[in-house]
Image 1 (spheres, rainbow, N blue to C red):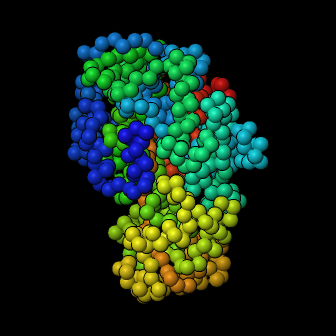
Image 2 (cartoon, helix red, strand yellow):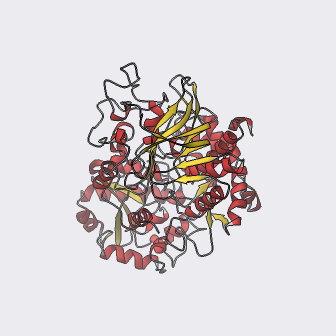
Image 3 (tube, rainbow, N blue to C red):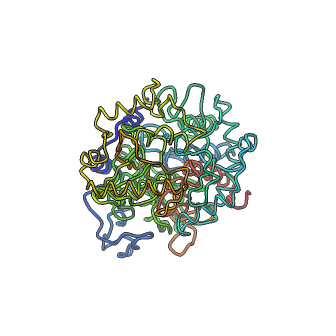
Length: 581
């Protein structure tokens, strides 16, 4: 396991300090043109598309409203590195998918990656309409799924992009299933608790589809048998296949600027290689931006997603990673920002707790002892509301009858004797034993009375007890008059001992990319495609908006695999994805 993967597992196991981790991720490195972004807080207003740069004849910003809007001096000392058909910037899940698909169609492919190896995050991958789903009786209406994802963005996203994922992902996953089988992988129902089986029957506002799968080998869980997040399996299979097809991967190589000809077509990339020298690589067909999200760039979070700064930890961002480099490079080449707002992916991941790990719907109260929102375990609803509470803190409240409520809320997935966090230790424990361990560690508060529980939490006793009484009345009536939670997900709090667990908010990524058209080709502010430049994965804008939608669990990885495959394949064949359906 690499050092970065060890750090990721450590972060998942114990969390990281929010401010120091976010700041460290920015200050420690990145392109010279982006250096100091954390220290130079933007003075412009935040927003979905931002302020267009203004100034000199070379396109550089003279107002410097945001540090990355200052176009750097052109690189003039680069040596020639070679000619390729396609260059991909970033070796994550979308970059590897594109590299495999393009090289399989005979294209000469180069992938440049600043890290020492490819990046593998996550557990589940969402798609619709694969042979595997049909064989397992999973029928999902792609129009319904696309509609809910689109509406989640408040209709700011590009509906055509969402429909492309909904209608084309099944075929891509058929391809991936066959490719994975060559490496001994099998496709199984999603392994993470984000995927909630049976929720497709709920009303639209709460509905989640069983669209997600995991690719595993025997013995894998959320982590592989050697300790990597299980998505490593399919990404590694894609990487090995791309290498076998002749694709080249250059690690410890940082993309700095795009190369453009006199017409504005993107024809290559300037990089800084491992030795610190500038090198120019040329691409006759095009460059695919697969450079990730902005979660490691504190100044970009300030500009587009300040709520992320109130998360407890940053799970997936490594040192020097996810700095928004691709966003800056595209901007310098004339690209526009995503027209839909940033979409933070903040989940209720709490490795010190217990029942939040299986996404329970407990009464939530803030520091004033008040219930403040719907506790349905749709992650952005839970975390976004918590991060906007007084003091940025709230608690889940439950009583000694918690086991019966877990079983009623999740009848098909709950195992009474096992705790979902056991994948960290490999040793099975009872939920009760894990609860007692969390109490002993003073992470979960236990009390024999509601008065004592409120006192320990430092919240007003009378207000808290009134909240519990009101919530119990909703349980008895079967109708939540405050927030409309279905009866199945309400609980009654009346049997001591009583428990309180802090509601966690852990940022995975913050998605805000480049403006693209229906073919995932990067566009300028006037929606004109920039020849030779494409964006996929979290560098692709206009797919999500406002926050990450969980109507379709695993859709982030699923769209990365889908568009990576479709764009790589189409570009290799000198066509576009909308003409290959």
